[in-house]
Image (cartoon, rainbow, N blue to C red; front, top):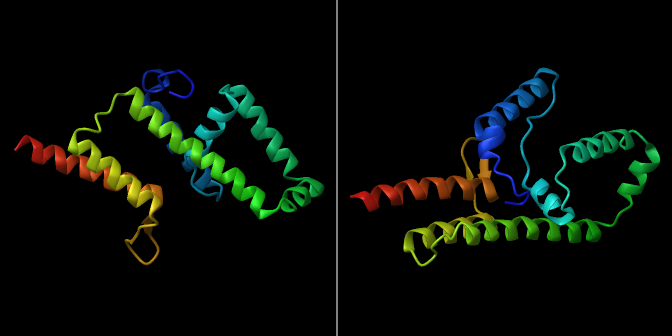
Length: 163
């Protein structure tokens, strides 16, 4: 919706997930962290209106290169936390706004109690700071917990609706 292209068609969800898997495998093979697709990228694309893979690639290479320069590190470290917080508020606000935009464009019927319960539950869990400790080292919280709850709740309510 943000870039006016259907990525489920081209390159396809299967290729996107495979690309994420390969990137995570390579990262793990060289001792790096897992890779993931971040919602922040959607916010940046929505804000700048620049969705070119080449521009993003050049920006990534530039950011990596600048990360090796001490004076750039010092400059970024000198940015007050309030400024970083302000940028974060705008960025996450854009992500949330894009989610609402998708609900509107897909004409999601929030008059349907099932849809309303799912959306409301996900919002409260995602924004309310809920957390579930799965093991001593694994926990779900925030948006990841909200997504899991939304998926499970949708399956349960669809099952009940068919009875």
